[in-house]
Length: 101
Image (tube, rainbow, N blue to C red):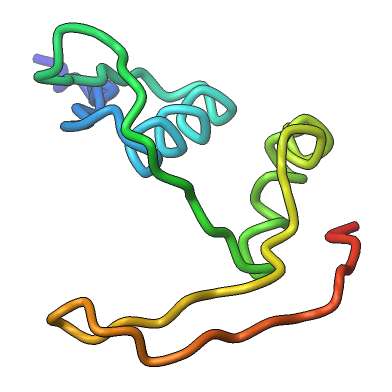
C-alpha cells in the first residue's frame, strides 16, 4: 500500500477588494498562487478620498512592475491639515515640491 505524498495546493480567500486585498491579489497572481477576492459592494463607486503612500512601499510596486503606472497617476502631497478628534484645526504642514522618483 502506497501513501500519497501529494499535498493539495491551497486557494487563498481574500475578504475585501480594498487597496490591501487587491495588492495581495496582485502579489499572489505574480507568485502563481490561486486566490479568490470576495467583496460585499455590488458596484464600484468613488469615495472621494485619497490614498497616501510613503516611500517604503515603492519597492513592492517596483517588484510588481506597476511603479511607473502608479507614478503616472500620482500627485505629490505638498501640505497636510491637522485636526483633533472634534475636527478643530490644529495647523498645517507644508513642504516644497519634490519628485517621488
